Image (cartoon, rainbow, N blue to C red; front, side, top):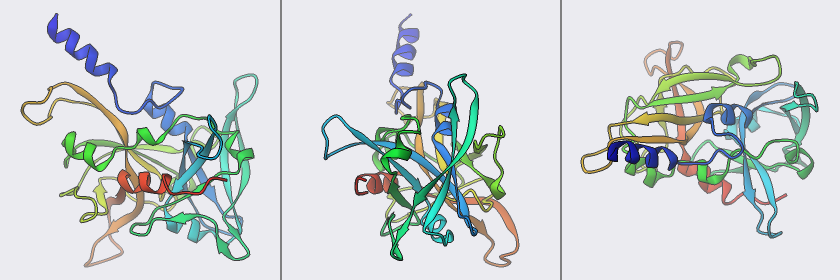
Length: 269
């Protein structure tokens, strides 16, 4: 009975609420969107709801992606492909224009250290996307250490490989992988980590996250836990230094700590 009670308590104390949906994979897919340019360039972004510091009780939306995803889009606006439910519950694919440049000036915020970027959505677009992810859903550097994140840990990544969508309504492709590099922290000494998933064009900017039960925590800590949250952001594929034409089936990702720093710095709309 005591063991059952312990398990129940730990299952209820999962990291990250994934607001509005208790199933993390569905919440992540609903929060992940294709970005594309009218004249070329495409990638993946995912959206967070952030509390406003200007208006008490209000919030705004921020989309996070790789910096080179925005750089690859030469237009002043990127197309963000939304997937929405209409009044009958049917999923509908639609596109909105997200301004990313004005007077030849970049409007997004780039992280000073890694290939990650963020921009606040105009309120009109922000109101059309669900509020499922918040900054509390990001796994910090301290949590990586406390949770003993290590090579072989199962992760999930979302993206639009070669612009492929699923469901016919603009949802990303879900792929399973494992953490494939070591060491993982401190993150400023190791600003990227590898996962065992090929990095196709279109996947850059997509989330890498944990959604698993784990029994391998260090000695002295509870042996049954649920670890879930955003571990990082895909930035590029990994190539051989001997022959760059050889695809190794690996991708590089930026740790979540840097995503958190972007979210806390991005200007409100």
